[in-house]
Image (cartoon, rainbow, N blue to C red; front, side, top):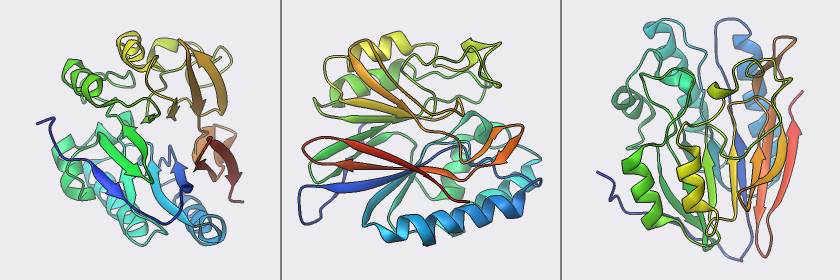
Length: 255
């Protein structure tokens, strides 16, 4: 099941821009504000730039009932079906609370939640770091790690919901008291594969921005689009990653 063909998007020129949104947490509380910010990001921020692809790094939902979550998933999908670029979804731990991965695959019309996309010869590897039975904790797993070992290239950008780098989260309102819930439990094994091959890892989950170097690899944490903190329930964060001779990350906020 791990031998799907890669996707490739070709555009003129060697530089491309990729959009990144993470931790949407669509829920009944603040529902309209979250939807409004998504439209703002699309129409006012990302529409001004030629976006080659957009990655959604998981936690589309703040889990509720299965019926409500399905309704919210379909609502999110309807927005991204009319996005400024093709979209790839990663899953977060909240997404699998009421739906299996097979159900999410059918609703989001995406065969799987890990793979490789090449844009202008830049490899973007996206990983599935969630399991239905482990709650907030992440895991890549031996099958996917084996696939990653065969797949990763020397300049790859690696995207995941759970961070692979080591970020300062002692004061993090969500994970400061339980740091083990912030990372995949097989992070060491994943980094052993990536440290001499990949260029950078990009992640969400911890609801804070950050950049760090760990195990010889650069790591970037993208801030949450909503539920950044209890006092900032809808923040509208997003990021743009420009590729070319070097990577350049810019962040923004729809307000």
